[in-house]
Image 1 (cartoon, one colour):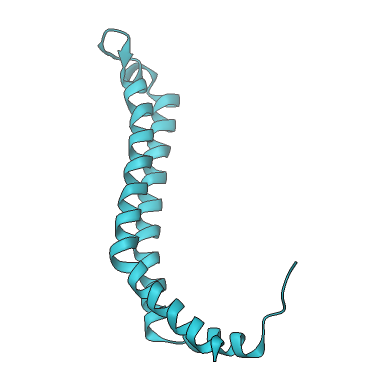
Image 2 (cartoon, rainbow, N blue to C red):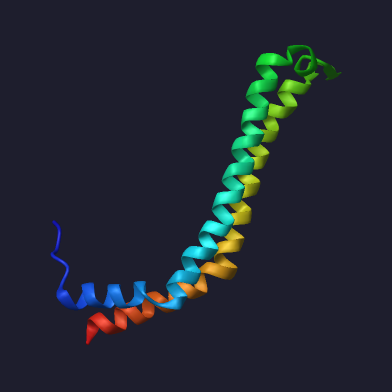
Length: 112
């Protein structure tokens, strides 16, 4: 069941959306997400391209049955989890306090 948003709630959202805190929240998010996404996609693309065009290098045995391609593949998982942990810490330190403050303001306004 969906509720129609009240005029008061819409006005409160519009006011908060126009604040410097909200702009800082968006800026912080994009400053983190855009460069990290580009870097991760470049790292992943490097893995794919090397797998296709540098088979000799990727097939090089490091020890036992472990080759460079396997290490690169496993590092994709390590990188993914590392970025997730990094983002969680970043959000908790820089974004969550601002978001919590804005949410409290919004809820206070619509309860009046």
